[in-house]
Length: 175
Image (cartoon, rainbow, N blue to C red; front, side, top):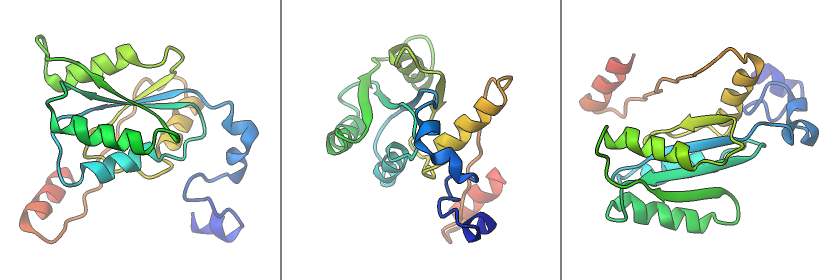
């Protein structure tokens, strides 16, 4: 990345080849739907959700926040977020109802897939505790486009211990 920046690509943090950011390439990117099953509202959720909806992906992109009901504290918080960004992103909140056949999270994901745009090529499932790099959706999509045999991709958390014993234990567990 540093070498690319030295060679004039000031957007190397987003993509290695600056030519990929040209409008002619961006308009041909596949549609992506981001489905986020939500439950509850914690101290970092709003920051995480903002990092997700402010992606710098250049193709068609929709965000579906899925909650069980309006009684969930996440409903009101994400409703405000969507209202604040209504002119900048395609984001919706979906009420999934109570699950009767599987976990609520899986139920919310399935309802999100049922309600996604019909022209979606890729679905990205994100947990509400994920903080995204602005180029994450583009990078994941680019890999899928390069290798059509890929059926699924996954990622692992990058935990940075905050100094407490608990955060260090979680870091070690994930490593």
